[in-house]
Each structure stands twice: as C-alpha cells, then as structure tokens.
Image (cartoon, rainbow, N blue to C red; front, top):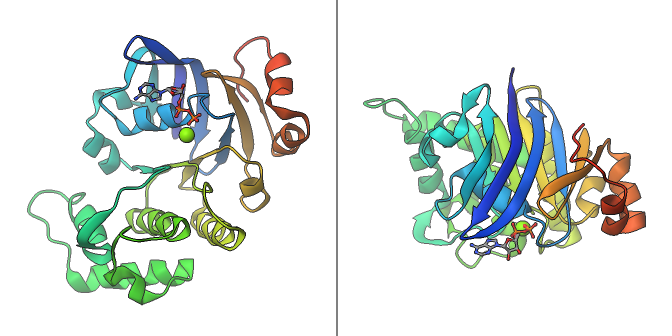
Length: 254
Ligand code: ADP
Ligand code: MG
C-alpha cells in the first residue's frame, strides 16, 4: 500500500509523554490536514517523522509504503522520498539556495553518479517557473535575512526540486501575511498530484481556504480526536477545539 501509515504512536521527550496513541494514514495522492491547538504535539510528530534524536518513540509504528520508517536514519528517510518543511527553518549563511538544493539533490544519487549542472539548472528553473519565483532568488544565502514568507517559499521550492513521495509541512502558514500565504498555497497546489501524499500541519483554518484538504484530522493532547472531510475545518473554526475534544470517545481516524 502506497501510504504513510502511523499506528498507535506514542512519543516521549525525557519522561514526558507528548504523543499518546496517534493513528493516521496518508495515502499518496491525498492531502491530509492535521489541526490542533498549540502544544497538542503536532511539531513533535513532525520531528519524529524526520528522525529527530531528542524524541523517543515508546510504542507504535510508522510505515512508509510498508517499510519501517523508524529503522531508517534521517538521510535514508529523505532518500526514500520523505520531505519535511519545518515550522522554523534554519539559516545557512554563505550557502546559496542554488548550491544548497544542488547538494541536496546530489546526495540522493547513488554513489559515483554526478548531477550534471545543465540538468540541474534546467530542473531548478522549471520548478521556479511553476511556483512563479524570480530566478535571482536562488543566488541568496539560504534563509539569511529572509522574511517569514520568503523562508516558506524556499521550503516549497526545496520540496518542488526534491520531488518527494510524502511531504510533511509544519505550520507552513505561521507568520505569513495573506499574500505570502497565497503564494505558499499556490506552490503546494501546483505540486499536488497522484504521486504525492501531503500532511499539512496547521493551527489556523485560514490556510485551508487556499489548500483544500481531502481529509482533516484534529489533534488534541497527543491524539486524533476527530477526523472528517474539509468541512470539519470550518466546523472547528466555528465551535473551537473544546467541542472537538468533548465529542471524542475513541482515538479515531478517517
Ligand atoms: P504543537 O506543534 O502542536 O504546538 P509541540 O509538538 O511543539 O506542539 O509541543 C507539544 C508539547 O511538547 C508542548 O507541551 C511542548 O512544551 C512539549 N515539548 C516539545 N518539544 C519538547 C522538548 N524538546 N523538550 C520538552 N518538551 C517539549
Ligand atoms: Mg508546532
């Protein structure tokens, strides 16, 4: 089965359990929004998917196309086609976006294989065109002095160039004004397709006005308390997270 399958997952930091029995399936070709109040464990889940060493999976499993993700190092996960856009992307002074993305692509090739410069730039510019980005952008250092919107745009460009099978976007809308939000949404929407599964983590409903998800899941206190179609996001906006939590009995999905 081509899906990212998270099953009864428990995650602890130190002796504190943050994710508590989370089950979620993201098939390729679908966009699943994961919503929840601050502190519910959304970013913790994203970090565990990336393989962050400070977060420990104490129970449950994560399978990507049937393969045990937790057995893989972070770079192997990336090579298998998992992409993460972080809530707070790092700055890499002195490294241009063009060189950074080239190194990222190169590192995914089998040993001894060289990425041709002409092929690379053709691909880079094709993706930038798709996303409506100016070429001059790529000669800037990664995230250095970038606005919130520019950082997110860089993440989206990275995703476009790496062509992942699964993408986890953590709060890609945070700190964005409405124009930047639309740009990011346009980017995600143009990359959407049958080969890509997207887990879109967001605190606010407004992003989902521009990226219409196939499914919406509500996470409260480390587990999914409700799942539904896109209308759930609207209902949530109206009634709040307490409503979502109060209605829940079992951790549910789909
Ligand atoms: P969200 O992204 O949903 O806002 P987080 O996953 O960032 O939530 O955080 C969930 C909870 O886990 C919070 O109470 C947070 O303080 C705690 N937490 C997250 N990371 C750490 C850490 N490295 N050390 C201690 N507590 C953490
Ligand atoms: Mg977060």
